[in-house]
Figure 1 (cartoon, rainbow, N blue to C red):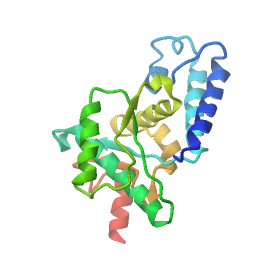
Figure 2 (figure 1 turned 180 degrees about the vertical axis):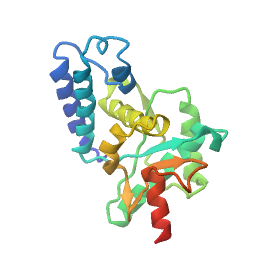
Figure 3 (figure 1 turned 90 degrees about the vertical axis):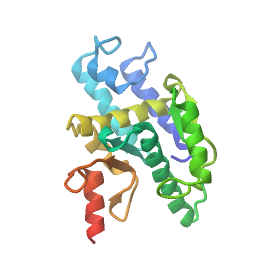
Figure 4 (figure 1 turned 45 degrees about the horizontal axis):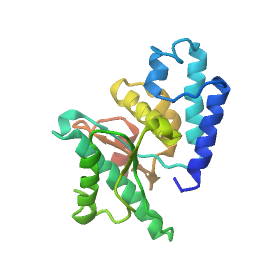
Length: 219
């Protein structure tokens, strides 16, 4: 997203919070909302929890954002975190390169929730910028990844919901949430580049990421 967009996303999520929790601040964490094992979700009626999830979908689809995600089968690699990060960086850099070709010379930043992989990911992006990934050398990042607590930023809470939507689609065959936001994933020339599915079953996988790649390859 462009640098002005986070302000409006934060305001939209804050309004959603005020609608359902006018007295107490909450962190929107998709799995916690769905499982409703702890407060404030435990005592919240199912229809209100569903309304919150739909509200998060609407915030994503009505703002100028471009999404990226990687769904990975563990059987395809011995290093799933590294492999997924490589794909994420490559796809984001490809998007930025297309902007650059169109005269929009933005650079990109990646912001993560705090993780024990912080040092590893910062080192990897440095390697990708100097030596390249398996796809290409990355030229469009402004700096190394930054890390912060998801409680402090609504953007990471929205990213959590997006990740949950992808997880539900590929792990549980639950397409409800991903179907609502699929149009926001980076797409060019009929191929969804922003959603990557690393699978040994690519040739017959019916998911939108694999399907659009196969269709494009045939034309």
